[in-house]
Length: 193
Ligand code: SF4
Image (cartoon, rainbow, N blue to C red; front, side, top):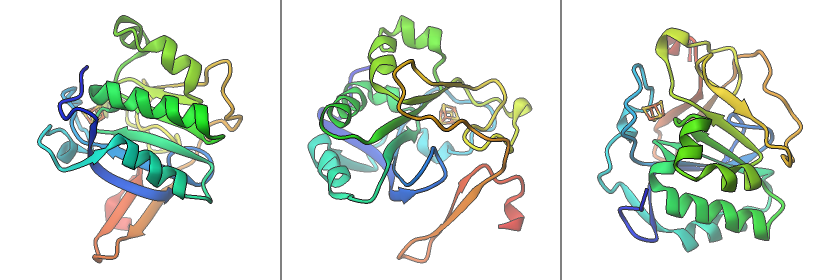
């Protein structure tokens, strides 16, 4: 899908150091906009395609390269492949110019990615994909890196990520400078946070 905002990403949120979506310390990028409308989606505020924070892709790349103490990047959303041109551009740049591992969450399944003709590029460049819609009736908060049992973790043949998702429940709580509290992960009961 062509990007609505040219070479700019529409960004919902950036977390320069998160430990919850993939192994190690990772630069997390939540892209704004998703039309897949999964029942029970926890990120409904990321459905709208209205511009939230527009950021030139070169600028985002610079921000990632400026982070010296990370193991990789994780792209999620929203639906990263509804900003496919820029997402694929970023993945390629990171793969070509760094040793950072790349993890991508997408609501699309592998057959859908193949139909979109994005699969070959993703399989070549991404280290770990979490694919498929979130299905509330299949929710399991104890799968570490994915939220519902139907979702598939795909480690392409050339993946540099060796660590497998473990049967555990992890939550990361981030207190922003503004005082806003952000809960990342798959909490089983938010009232306990
Ligand atoms: S793909 Fe992700 S962001 Fe989009 S509706 Fe499904 S769970 Fe929500």
